Image (cartoon, rainbow, N blue to C red; front, side, top):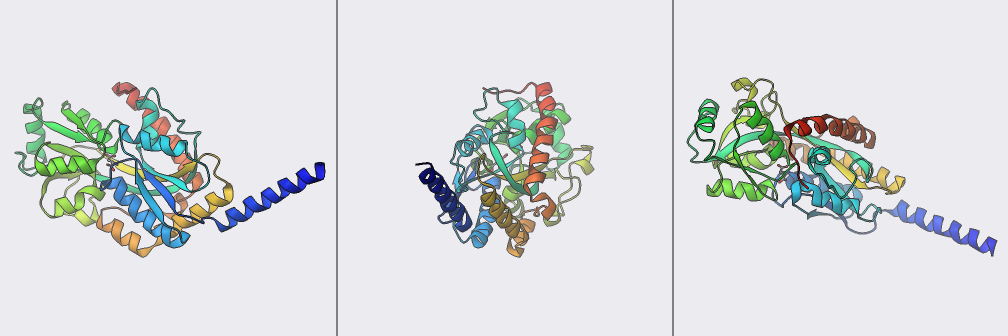
Length: 322
Ligand code: ASP
């Protein structure tokens, strides 16, 4: 009986081991916790496509938007830890613990880490016929019309929400915010003129800026963005030290086996080294992180430092959701 049991568990280990050695054997999904067609989706699809090449399995993007990304994150926290469900998320991963009183998952305990991906700058844009023609006019206009102006964002904890908070606090003006499930639907309303203003990532705004479909007042990075070099930074226009860069990482559910995680790290790094990925990201105003950051350790350490950084800032701002 004992021998049988030992043999059986040895067999199970061998089977599990060989399943992991062959991993992945079927299509995988990468959850993007925002609407399709937006900045996280665009980055996710670029990375997933390149990982598909290395993994020789399709990586399908699953858009699970809502509640500033927390619904999608929870979906991955509860998924089977077998390497077939991944998460691509941004800075919102680190702000949600302070923003949401009843988060249905534990940010620092429910995930395994694959690596950081890219830091994406943001742009302050408006609908085409918004009256102010430059940053100086914008600030004066917002102060004079604070009750009328609507500001779009992708929900509490989204990058557009954080950028908006920092901007409104920097110019000491409160605007009416309109939350969406992602900045893709928000962009549709900016283009349609139903909402006035938005701070959104270059991965979503570059083509609209270049085709003149939206007005742009500045970029949120410290230095100008090479692909949008005619657009001044907010800092150089007087909003001193204003800097927002949206970092992104790839995660797996807690308990995903180490060999599977190792395989995913290799695939992520291959994707970030891919020259097509580099070109595509450069066109969209960003670039892959250096390889030393595309590691589980770098993401684990960085996420923890961001959770520690944002907690007190958000508490002080007094922003919460249940
Ligand atoms: N990342 C969100 C999206 O993809 C936007 C945001 O965070 O502001 O829609």
